[in-house]
Length: 328
Image (cartoon, rainbow, N blue to C red; front, side, top):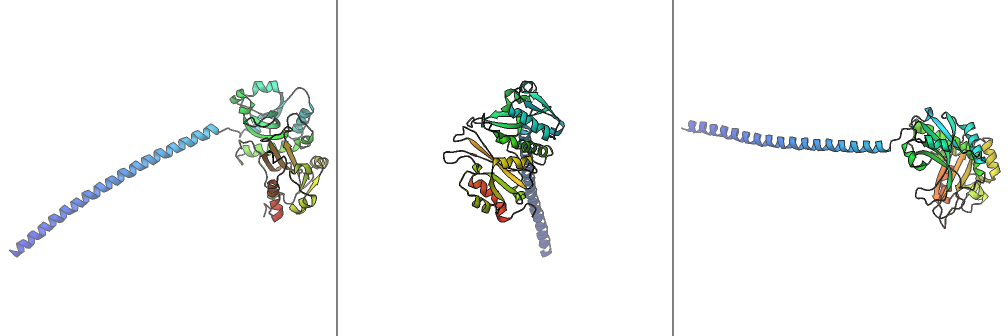
């Protein structure tokens, strides 16, 4: 009897264990199915999200993409007026002596109007333009633009790769003329780097600058009127560890024409009728390599006039003060 009971207990326990195991297996299977469905759903949602993000990014890139890798192989149309004015003659002379990046041809503004929508052309021209908000008094710029359909809406709608200020409106005092050869090189170096993909086009039109750390062995020549605040000759020399001084515009013109070695020269361009809100453009340019080492602009206010500010001088002089060299 006891043996039978023991056998029945074992049989009961075995059936109970089988039922319990089956129950747990069912629960485990349901749990696994739930996890699989959740993971699959999350993966689908993530994949859909990734596709949405990728699609958005592609559309965003496509909307802003302008192909400029063909610059060296395309003809640059240099736009000139028919009046043979001194600015045009000097501009033409600078192009003939210094333009090397692309084939170029001259055209009039009337011819420009006929072909400005052709994407096969790039254009180098002098234009009067204002701040995008229309608040800045008229300034004249040398600008490089790409032809395209948007030109129908005006030059301001064309793809503008780089612009450099040359003089304020009708106040062509002649100072900028000696800098035109340097402008040709600055523009072309920028376009070459953009075309090669080494730098991304700056659609705010600001040019590329070489770091001041590469200029610590160069002497900087300032026209005193270019410095906004009171800074004596002695203090200027101390600020740059003896590597800067005031000089005349005639000396700067000579340094550019003679391609004086290891020298940077100052340039400030501002509208003649500048008012509060007008821009002042400040540059330092190498006279031997015709490269741009400093480019900055600020808005003029009642308290802030035109010229290199203390903040500008601090930025420029820092590598000189601490002996920082880009090569180190």
